[in-house]
Length: 227
Image (cartoon, rainbow, N blue to C red; front, side, top):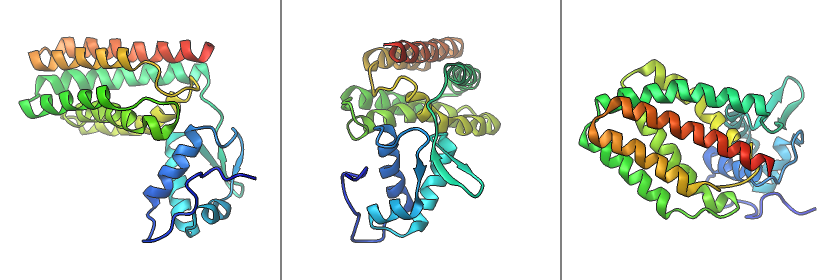
């Protein structure tokens, strides 16, 4: 049976949990594990050439994303894909939190934040958007950074905590459509509209642009999942 980790065992210097996390995340996103499949900590450790400890830590982190689930005395299993109802609920929650973040952050934004947002959009433009996680990882990271920067600069630690709690679920949300990046042009245009509101210091426009963006992201995921 072929390995779900094409890169093979990871040797050399001590492998940290975040490296194992990246390998597991790629395997989950690329569909190398079936929904409901049991995840053997010892088996994964053997394949990656590491001890069980970083695998255990990586799975605990992935549990936060909703991609894996842990049952008492049964270990970890691959979670089912997000349902249409869960998808709609997550979009609604993101709009409530992130639209408020955008309005607050815009009202107190300085030139440094605006430049960081512009730079993240430029990274979106230049990042590859191929069909596998290794090909669109940089695109996802740039997208995450854009939203994170706004949340971190909203000035409300409770909203930031709420944003961070939802953050992991966004990766599972992206799997709802069963595809990689299919909407780069539209997402970049929507990010740019948010940036323009920040550049103009228009907090109300920043809120409206963020709501429009998240509506678009949600609708496109539904369209992709139905193809």
